[in-house]
Amino acid sequence: MRGPEQTIPEFEVDYSAGYPMAQLTDMSRAFFYTSVVAGEEYIYALYFGKSVDLFFQEGELSREIFVFDYDGNLLKTYSLDHALFSLAVDEKNKRFFGISSDKDPNVVIFDY
Image 1 (cartoon, rainbow, N blue to C red):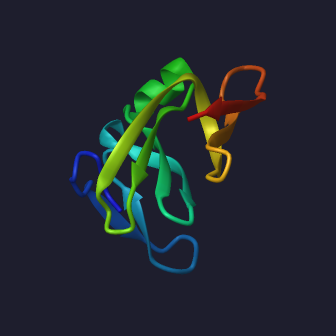
Image 2 (image 1 turned 60 degrees about the horizontal axis):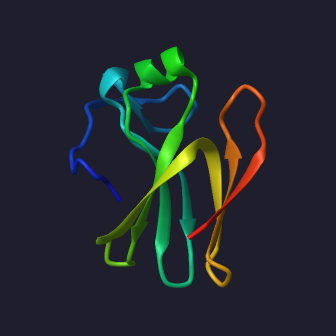
């Protein structure tokens, strides 16, 4: 799943781990998902929509959750008041759980 820019970043194939894997060549344009949860009905993706350079300057991660159907269509976007490092989803009770990415990380809960 790519997105939301729908671009493929430039990369080189790296074998340093003993097997081929993609290594991005321009990290200033590396927009990515930091955590993905496959739920019963939907896919929840915690999106880091900044360059990696800004991550190292600002020190925080993702503030947006994208919700996709299993065909890859974007259905909803949630903007959070806390930046998260990881994500868990309780679809039954409509809650997001996350680990905050601030200097003193905590478990945070969002009702949706």
